[in-house]
Image (tube, rainbow, N blue to C red; front, side, top):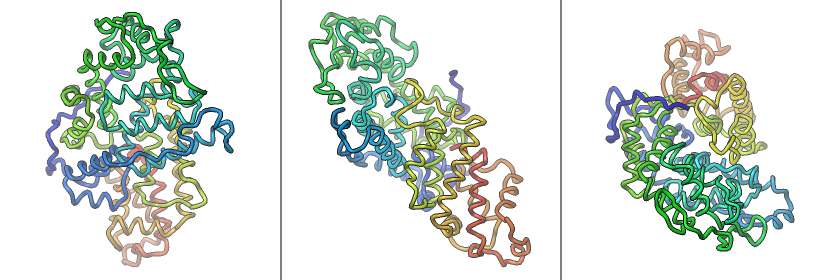
Amino acid sequence: METQTSCNTATLAPYVPTPENPWDAFKVQSMYAKLGFGAHPVTIKEALLMTPQEVVSEMISDAESLPLTPAPEWANWNKTQFDNAPNNRNYYTRQWTETTIGDLLNNGLRDRLSLFWSNHFVTEIRAYFSPAYQYQYYKTIQTHAMGNFKDFVHEIGLTGAMLLYLNGFQNKENSPNENYARELYELFTLGVNNGYTETDITETAKALTGWNSWDSTWAAIYFNPNTWDNDYKTIFGQTDKWEYDDVIDILFEQKGSLVATFIARKLYQYFVSPAVNEDIVSQLGQILFDNNFELKPMLETLFLSEHFHDASTQGVLIKSPMDLLISFDNSSSLTFDRFYNIKAIYRIYSANLGQELYNPVDVAGWQGDESWIDSNTVVLRWDYLDFVIDKMKQNDTEQFRNLALTLLGGNTNDHILVTKTIVNSFLARPLLLDTDYDEAIEVFKGEVPGNYYDDGIWDLYFDSVPDQVEGLLRYITKLPEFQLK
């Protein structure tokens, strides 16, 4: 896919609000949608009272200090233990997928990054099957989500999920398999046809041999020197009897600048815009390179920058299915009917919309952006959010009134202000035309007689308000602008 060029010319200097580029609710909502999965209306209000630097620094600090998700009891089970367990393997896979969704709902930036890395270092559980490997893979991603990228590359390649998925487990001295070597360069560190040759791949595959022994199926995989190719290999012009650790060292020593720029570009397109400012990407890559591949300095520079907070970046990324469901949940602050497992529903719905966690479409991962929406999925998006709103209403009708009261800061009889405030609270930028708001106002007015608004009879404690807010939410979720962050 051809890279688009961004028209955003703002720099990486720290963002200072201006009248032309204010620190307003739209900017805060867009930021929380990109760096997390939306935020409670109270959180948005609190952020507006802080400086951008204070908010972003707090988000980064929280991401750094957040404990890893506790391991399940089956974290290190082998296949025999799963076969003898009271539930089948799919039960444990679903259980951990729903735990992951809980992390996305609650953990902000740390697990926004975890989701990104799961679509970078792609594996597919349908290829390796083990729930224990699923958990171990996720733990590795959480551990390194904002850590050292070189260490990350080293550790992810030795997870059971990756060794089985990209055939490292089958890669032996007398039968080398080039699958992981190819993707290590092409997808994980350098990019397609960028700084490596077919010979480099072949020689790298030989160096990566030996990681193919376990004491039982789905147990820990360890290095076996008897299946390692101990001949000389030449990788990026260097010759010796290289093995796994050497490959990673040589890659980052010889191609570090290319690796840094490749990762910077991918993070830029995920967090800022599908259209790229190559000068900014180059600067971010240099920061990553200069800091020995520590991710935090680069991410911190980006997230604090005037470039990230430029108005041109608001509402330009299409929400993924997970974004759509979880950001509505967080931003509405509405709670679900207790008889429904919200995490299970989000697991099923996101998969139906094309984002099945732990099962990206292929080794290249979900392509994102425009690939998320077509004529079929957009209708499903509407239908699924209608179902979610149904279950929120079944749980507590009054919470819809309370949402309005929270957003407005108390009671009011200004139905136009109420409508615009609720609409705007779910968007990354204003609706384009006043007539767009007029239509929303008519939806919100509903069946209430017009003179009730004119005479001040209506206010937020009027009997019909919960139904009015509900109807407006259904309208908002079908707006094109609602699909963007």
